[in-house]
Length: 436
Ligand SMILES: Cc1cc2nc3c(=O)[nH]c(=O)nc-3n(C[C@H](O)[C@H](O)[C@H](O)COP(=O)(O)OP(=O)(O)OC[C@H]3O[C@@H](n4cnc5c(N)ncnc54)[C@H](O)[C@@H]3O)c2cc1C
Image (cartoon, rainbow, N blue to C red; front, side, top):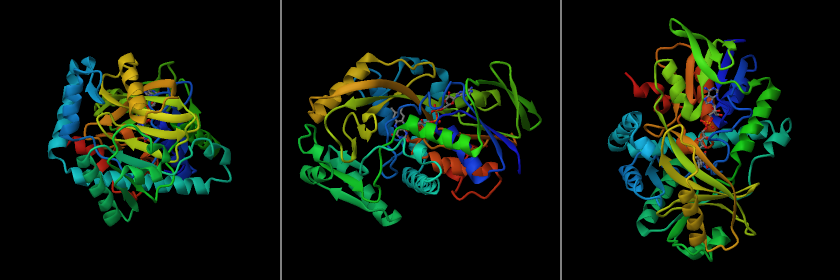
């Protein structure tokens, strides 16, 4: 293992934190991070929702979610939908059949707990890395966090509030969290004063008092960890698109870039977001990730948010106070990998929704951005060894939680690459769950 060369393919948040963690945990490794773009985080990690908290995340594998997606096909005014392009794509239906299977037969509660534990491990690791590197890499570490006091999860119907309340109390009981429940608009507004004159429905909200930081900017965070990695000795190569692999028996010996350059290494890690599927296909396994398009905006307003907000309801969205303004994000549209078009109807719908719900009149939307989340067919990350190959690994499929899971994923992957016993139970994330 000493002095081995590991190549990480993809400079989004997942590839960058993976390269960082490999070098951070084992300075003797020679780590090379490749991306086909001229900079890191030019795809999904460029401008996401800005949520870094771990408490209130639920798997998408629910029948209700699938049903909303089907209904959304016939309306541009839906938070979740399937595009025409995906509808006519055979591979989408193969992926979707697995998603349906997972929604019907997998233990939803167990998944919710795994998501919580994995997110919390990531949050704590991130805190300890920041502390450890606070002196040597202060400028980079100061560049990406927003200013807030954690996340307030707001519900608009009695039924959704009751189930959220139950989940919050379970977190207190099973995971020693400190979730506080506010069951009136007035008490929610004590947590976030802007909710006092909010126009939309508010039945109640919850907040984990242990989480005192939520908002962040995903490009700045990825860039910060690329800079830190480079200072630790990770080599970074931009404009480097991987097109082919060279195999000998059960091993990959080299990869080829689009400019003809050949890169030889001992181990290879695929962290290429929605493109992981096509890279996997070249090695004999189409990694089951599918693109789910989402939208984000920076809002200029005179209002200051004290907390970040998740607002439930028929079109759920997030508001997070990042350095560029208030980050506003939402919408899930299952589509194809070549579809990065911004649909003006969806943009108009999202902007109108926020104006109607908030009642804020001074909103100016900037930096409209669309990108593709890499969603696995059971909505859990895929981390571990590539089937039938001894020296290829995968870290992908993080869906809507790439930054939330970045550090626990990188830690797990790095320990597996080094042949160490991982701290996190690898089974819920293992690629082997998709094949026999
Ligand atoms: C609207 C929206 C809001 C979101 N909000 C949040 C949030 O609040 N919190 C959160 O944690 N997550 C959020 N997410 C999800 C999160 O952004 C993703 O999970 C995460 O960015 C995925 O990171 P990645 O590194 O796997 O993929 P990417 O960021 O897409 O990176 C993959 C990289 O691989 C490179 N690549 C691809 N193919 C090749 C090749 N052949 N050769 C070389 N390089 C290649 C690409 O150039 C790219 O840089 C959100 C997503 C969306 C769409």
